[in-house]
Image (cartoon, rainbow, N blue to C red; front, side, top):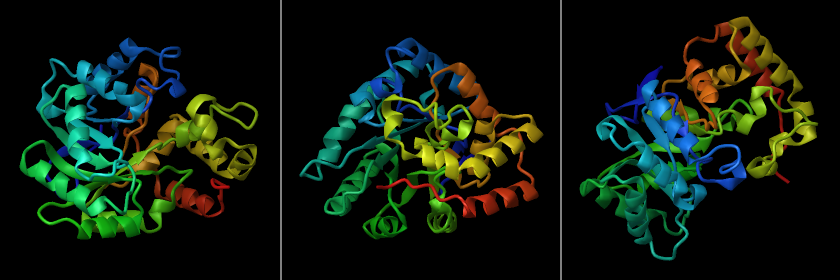
Amino acid sequence: MKYTVIGNTNVKISQIGLGTWQFGSKGWGYGTDFTRKDAISIVHKALELGINVIDTAEAYGRGKSEEIIGEAIKGYDRERIIITTKFLPIAIRPSSVVKALNKSLKRLQTDYIDIYLIHWPAPWLIGRVLNHMERMVDEGLIRFIGISNFNLGRLRKAQKKMYRHRIQVNQVNYSLARNQVENDLLPYTQREKITVMAYSPLGQGWLTGKYTAGNTPGGTRRRNRLFRSKNFKRGEQLLSLVKEIAEDHQVTMAQVALNWVIRNSSVIAIPGVKNLAQLEGNIGSADFELANDEIDRIKKTLKEFHPRLLM
C-alpha cells in the first residue's frame, strides 16, 4: 500500500481508499448482488489490508451506507481510521449543516468526522456553510474541511471564504476516462497542497475491460454516458493501450487505471467494490510503477480521446 498525507497536514492516508456509494444503494445491486454482511466484510478486509480511508455520504443509500460503516468499525481503533462523509447543501438555512453532521455522527456511531465535505457546490450558501464548518473544527466535531465536485474557479472562491482553517480536500470525478482535472485543477491543488480524492477512478467499470458496447451495466450506471456505444468506439485506442500495458505488467486493466490516478502523491483513489476479490485487486494497483514511456503513450492517447459525456 502507498500512503500520502491529507492536504498540508501530517496525517497519513492510504492512496487507495474504499468508496461506499454502493452500500445500501439498490441501484448498485444492494440486497441482491451483495448484502449488509458482505459490505461489513469488505470494510473489515480493507482495514486489514492497509486501507485507512473510508468514504461515504449522507445521500448514499439514504444514510444506510453510514450506518453500515458505523457497525463495521466497532471494536477497531477509531484513531487509525479516516472517515470521510458528505452532506448535500440543499436546505435554505446554512445552519442545516449542523443538523446534517449530527445525523451522520449518529449513523456512523462516532464522536467526530475526519474529513467533512460539501457534496456539491451551492454558491448562494457556500460562505456561511464553510463558516459553520470552521466552528465545527474548533469544537472538535470534524478534523478537516473538504469540498466535492468543485471546479478550479469554485475552489478558489471557496478558499477566499475561509477565515481560521483551510480546505484540505477536493473530491472529484477523475479517471483515465474523465481526466480534465489534469489540465488545471490538479496542478493547482498540487501547488496549494490540497488532496484530490478521485471518485469513479475506474469510470464505474468502463476501464476494467468487463464491458463492451453490447454488454453494458444496468442500475445506477445506466446514466453514465461512457457506456454509450459511440464512446466505446471513441475509446478503442485507449482501452487497447490499457490492456496492452496490463498484460506487460501481468496485472489487470483496472490496476493500470488506478495506478495512473495515484501516480501523483497528491491524489488518492476511492473505488467502490462489491466483493473481496475486487478489493484485493484495487490494493494491488499500488504494487507497480508505470514506465516513463508508458506514461507518455497514455498521455498521447488521451489527447485523441474525446468522449461525449453531455447532451
